[in-house]
Length: 386
Image (tube, rainbow, N blue to C red):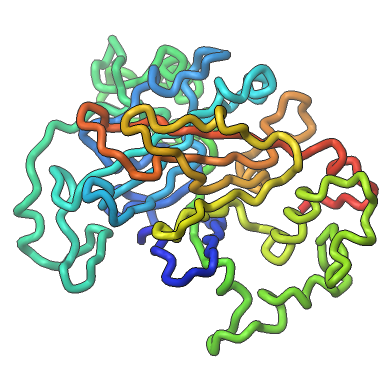
């Protein structure tokens, strides 16, 4: 299902994303939004290579952190649209320079394209599960590309012994040869050992979860649209089980220490009703006069205008689209006890407001900004992590 739908009112709408184990394989024809695992390519005839997502610190290929399926109505080339965020798994690289350890790409396709049948005109279903038996007639044959058996990037290299297994880089060939035990079945009639391949992927990739979404305004409401007993309304922040860091009511900030990061307190209060959220998608009101803004985790570390340059291809401004919260780290097998563990307060993604189509590019690199929690917020005596 598409991750998002256009906002239909002037009220600012935010879609919250939650991580759940997938009920079934997340395949390309279902246009998934997901965390970790191998990328599911919207454009299967053209996929990113290791060189495209190389960490500029350790010089190793980054791996998929998140991909979102976010189709838009304009321009026609964005009828199918996905955002891919890649991340170096080595936390020390981020401490050296997070700007060189994270990348984001936009990929899009028109309604009629070489890979996916057009949706049912009656239902406008973009998911590719159209029951029209003639829908596949519009598909064109294309040469499939080789995928790295470890990470799913373009397989530019192959095992010189069996000539059947492809890799994106020397690093992944080595890990598959050893941890994946390819050396034990290379050039034999034995098929790939699934258990060993699984172990190899666990060592390299982030765990895979499906991203399911719900409008922030709808969460906690019962079938009649009223606020339920346990969620949605601010009254649930008054009970003893609340993890909010801010007093609730008219004196939201009056009873807090004067030197506490106010943005941090606002952030904690906002996310407290639904602390498992890992993502906030805000670019829903396409026709609104004002661009969406992030939920800042701190008063400091906000990007300056020069940090978010206009799109180099069309000159249009890049606007805030979504943010990845630090709660996602709980799903990534990150050892927080390590000094060089992966860490962030929020990852903010900005993309071309016009979704410009660049004829000679299948993937357009966009802008990612990392904001960290302030020392004032984290050291506040009332701090309790979400």
